[in-house]
View 1 (cartoon, rainbow, N blue to C red):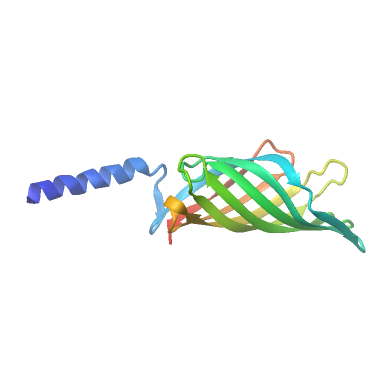
View 2 (cartoon, one colour):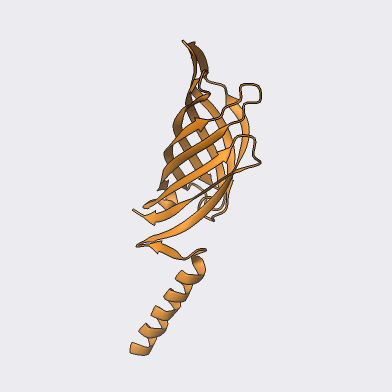
Length: 167
């Protein structure tokens, strides 16, 4: 009996090491890296001008996320934006629903916020620096992730890094 329990414990330990794609960095967390590829705009939202700024509310687009088995999938994003046309900087924020490519009925829903700088009115390019946090549902219930990233609009993809943890 004692030998059986020892073999089971060792097996579980090995499965945990093999199943974890990166080393643990905090209690109950693993570090993660993702790449997000932007897709088409599904809804341009409402755009309006205020003094020397432009605002967008409720725009929607879809992206594809890759890089971690739990976070691979299609990402439906709703975003809002305030952009100062004099400083060419601003903020963006919104929500997302990341549907798993590997586990039906599972994914993450969450919120994000970005700072925008060096925005180019002609090309729509600029630099975004932001954070996102998502809470799991379905088979991922009880998991939470936090990502940070900085990328230039117009890049092939945006890279982020962070943690995936048990709630």
